[in-house]
Image 1: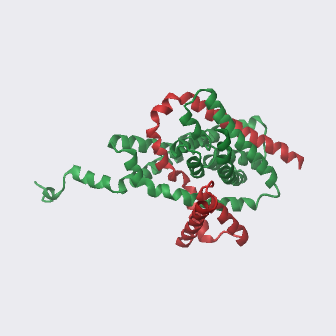
Image 2: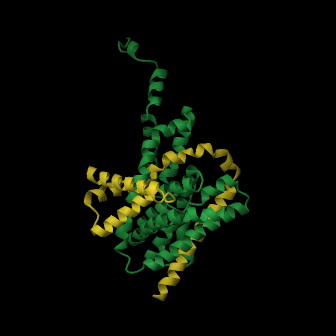
Length: 246
Length: 112
């Protein structure tokens, strides 16, 4: 039996041309890949190695490869998601403000450690990469990698680094910090939750922070404070430092 | 909820303006963050609708940097050529950063 609707249906290629011309395809792809990442992350009992962003990025990269969709075309649609990064950065004021309440006069100690940690992050990454002969176009992407990704990408634009590479290095750093952080902290016998959390937030921003929250609430609060303060301090100091160092 | 979103957009816009006309070396959203922080300190509390919107955005912060990160497809050859060196630099750097930050905190906090 023939379906009477069939003759009215446009050819698949026509549907495809229509779909890929609208931002919907890229948006659906991005959001579903993220949902898949979140599901796998929950299934793995929140193992930091099953990072939802990492999974989503791999899935989207493979999909646009299969669909033969150029990156520029994908980004044209996905930019609506990208735009909210700025809004998210502004929202970071909320956890920082809440963190202030639990400070108990530790601000100067925290700021000092933060600046020392931030300098260590840039010097060791750039120094090691140069020593190992990494391509100079990649080295600049390492400068802001310990800063939370939305701010890191803003810094990247100001130091002529690629925001994409910076985002990739930031996500990798976050995952590494969330996985390795506890061993470093145990080796140094750092026991206080606020110290452990703050160090994770400074070194591994959002991913380290969610790791800290899953272990202890105080550690999590201090981790968001560390991430937020590193964002502000990094945005002010890193472009200046890069100016005379590079 | 919409109220909170509008408030966040307003601070984002203010930050962009200050960045454009006064402090071009600091990204606009970071200035928006600082302005909002000052506003919250003056106000003494986080408005409920802003808290709802801000927390939901931050909870899914990772989603927002997927579009930029997918750009990695443009850098695959150069990344592959430098994969080991880059990984070594990232591992060393994150271990050193955690160690310095936590170590210094521990030493300084003991003095109090």
